[in-house]
Image 1 (tube, rainbow, N blue to C red):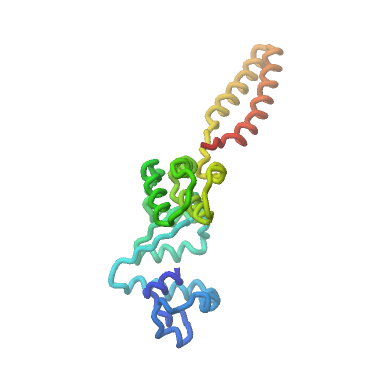
Image 2 (image 1 turned 90 degrees about the vertical axis):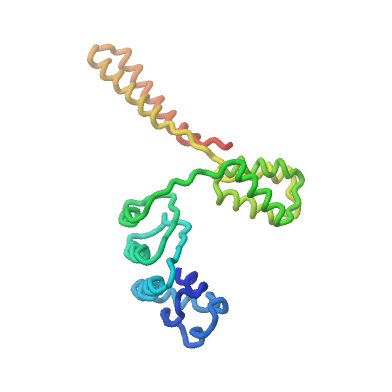
Length: 240
């Protein structure tokens, strides 16, 4: 964050204890590679003391976008709570970890549905035109990206960036394009719960009625269900 705030001029170099030579340079001329080691040596308290006042003193509301909060550690929660008080924060997380629950309480969750096929198609077409990509079968390429991306913007960007590196995107390369976002998972949990409950019920019924054959059959069925469960959960992902 310090890097971005410094680049847009919201953070004064002096607040990061940078050498005098950087304090009079325009933000766009400060090379991060030269100061990164110095900034990384600062403690979290020093960084907080530099960043929070800078955000608070800005004449407008600062909007901060975080691409992924998933890996956030509990030691950084206090810092981000302080940021929430002085800026508008929008972020994403693939998993809401319980050890940073204080952070989730301060945020409003907004479910974001996948992009529609038409929206994805427009993005791909615009990218092809802007990059001047050579594609043997544009229709096949666009349809494949729409299908494999599953409406995930990051998946679309990944496939387009990879394809743009090719001199010519032929049909073979198009068919080889794959992305994890194109995998849909079928939840077999309810089925397995019902099956296991039925097996357990059958075993108790066999014990109560003294039916040896039913008891043996239920035991064999339990072994089959447990074995099949492993393969079902391994193969639950079905590529589009």
